[in-house]
Length: 53
Image (cartoon, rainbow, N blue to C red; front, top):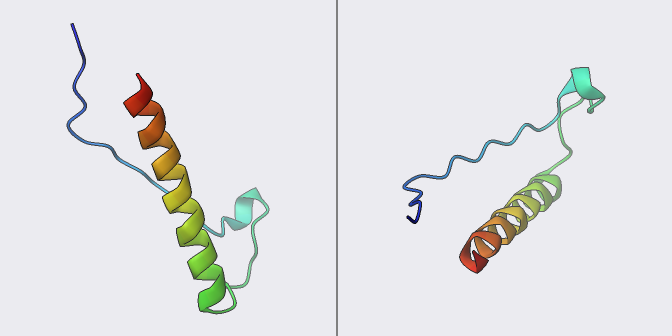
């Protein structure tokens, strides 16, 4: 019997000082764009893995 996933929840934590992250805020939009691009890439990888099943 196949399992159907109705919803995928993705959470990202950026700049966690307790885990050794930077104490200062990111410097500009370039850092934000890099973070968003990495998140999108990871989501696409996860979706591709699920499509292979």
